[in-house]
Length: 506
Image (cartoon, rainbow, N blue to C red; front, side, top):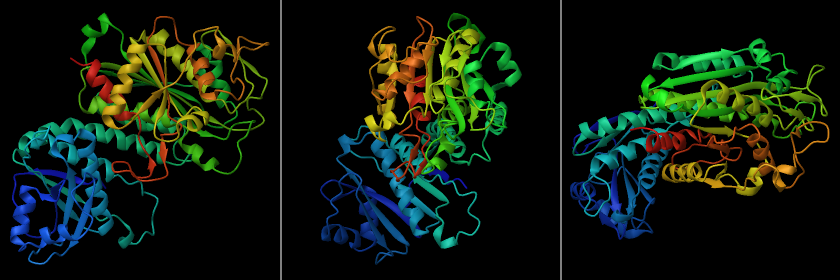
């Protein structure tokens, strides 16, 4: 169940849980001062006793403080007002939601004061607090049938009190739609592979029709006619049919679309990856349910753009297949012909993501003539070795596009790090040359994420701005962060939504 977010005019709640700010140096915010006075100095005495100083991110939880009827008071460290940025505010809202969820409190009132020297107006800060709370309160628990009530997060509502609640509510509306897109992606990524497979993922995407998204699906017969041998080869060992999901959002209208093609997003959607004949080790293979993370992000992004009525023409393509070993599965050494006409020697059937993307990239260029393409894929373990789990790898043939994506990622807390990409014929690119075909699908062990990107670049037409995001390390998290509970992260939805808002909407 989603946590309900409400904005209201300031009025100190006499009961329930309440969160108030404390500035660096143990300085109580106006709301905290009001509460402290009603409590006969209980709050100020508590602040003076321990290590809580009001530094950004610190939290002091006072249960049933003396002099008050409130069940608890959460003192939230704001740090220095001039240093508070969007992400800091979102993290504070998320931290409050996480703490309240763990205590069993059904609701919390978060007081937002006007602060001298703050970079944000109080209404804007209220929106950021609310967004952080919404993102952090997400939980995927639909299959937990015997969980005890005491083990479930109890938080059901967050009331944000601010001087101009109407303005905050209006501003929050678009952010909430983006948060819904993130949650949709997290749901898709978290579902097991017996629930989410190519056709069922398509069924989930069709729910976006009610938001104005046009959905088209190509089955194996249509893909075979188009010559998509690379994508079809990956799924040929599975009993489940491969699909190409095509979603369109025309928020800028037909007139604008004639001047420039839509922006395109392409997602790898391998709904389960055993590795095929080049089978993976058993340990950890259950994680391969989220090898469709790129397709999950593209689908969630299309929901976010349509939900907030973004003034942009965008197309989302998801290459959906299941990579299974069987008597009909693709074998190492097989040679397939892609839609582009280029031939590929399949050295390793576990390097399948680049194969499904190859045909999807070519299809979107042939069909839609996009002005720019961004693809997302849980493509390589090598990117995790290089960057860990905090940054996604960014590869691009366009400096401007790369800079824009880097800035967008930084602003929303979904950072990317640009990696090398060689021009055709240079060293990294030569690593995927094949003696038997136009290319092979893997190079040597060195620079594995780079040679994977080099492979994809061979399916991008000259002059088309393109970026590839390797999100293998950021799609799933084994730990909580202030706005992301452990599990499916939805990494990429907010990044690309911000990129669209900053550079493709007028």
